[in-house]
Length: 340
Ligand code: NAD
Ligand code: TDX
Image 1 (cartoon, protein in one colour):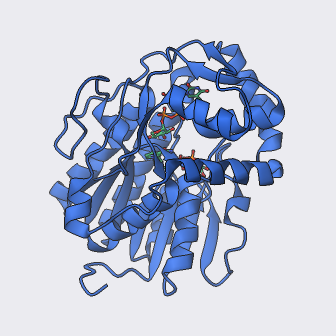
Image 2: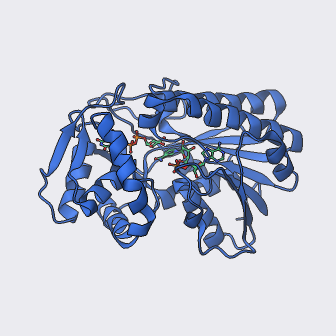
């Protein structure tokens, strides 16, 4: 586009073998023919090299490494125009059991990348979450905006909040050309089966009962991961430096409604689930006001039909049992040990 202020030809994508990162890499390869992607990913339990299968060799370089490895990060940054930073420990329930890897990857890892971006003058886009703003009451008409106060509830969201704060400070103090996006809950293909929607789909496909935390009335604001990708590209190339943009698609739904929609779409009774122990500190409601992104950058989501998006996601897990089957038993054993 003519008003692109940053037109990167070589980008680093951290966490590109995970759920949202891999969907972003596929989106860039499909929509930006002149861009080369270097993926930096540690392939933790959540990363899967096969998520990048099918990408032509001349469009992507895969580097198996850690974002906390300063020497490696420095070397990769030498000939990159921009970095899009997705890599994180991303699951709230895991952060409650053991916060240490969250502090290391989300805080120390972001610090390591920022230092390299400062040295090399690299354009930096930081991927964050709406969870940094804490939660809203069910009966509150308000939604999060870029001016909402930071009030994170969990070890995960507090580590993301810390990383956001460093990005802001590195922009203000050192002039790093940085932007931040805080997005709501993503769904779509290749999401790890520890997360709500894929856990329930794969429970049904495995003959297990589905599991609902607490009273099931917690609200999440769902967005298809492909819409997250297009928004990130707009912010990377046209967002104003130092600015934060909230990404959301007006997809507020409570958990029980989402679960019942999955059960019905898969031919099960809508009450065919177990109530299980609530998550400690469980955020009640997230809701995003994405007016700034829409007005300033003209972004709009394409996947506005949630029922269709859910049907496609169910189909993807049905068609790819090899992608999730090996992890299923261990994921469920871990949940069972927590009473969930
Ligand atoms: P994910 O857990 O599916 O993937 C994380 C990826 O990061 C994996 O490939 C993993 O191997 C890699 N990684 C982890 N630690 C690393 C390290 N030290 N060095 C290099 N790579 C490492 O996560 P996701 O759900 O795709 O989330 C991606 C980003 O989006 C995160 O920053 C998360 O906070 C943010 N986010 C997620 C959501 C959501 O709904 N899932 C919503 C808003 C924001
Ligand atoms: O089995 C379950 N039953 C259940 O009721 C699971 C796994 C979850 N839940 C509930 C908890 C939440 O209210 O469903 C909701 C969604 O849970 P998660 O998929 O764990 O997502 P959440 O905690 O909302 O965080 C997600 O969105 C924001 C991502 O995992 C984060 O990385 C992102 O920042």
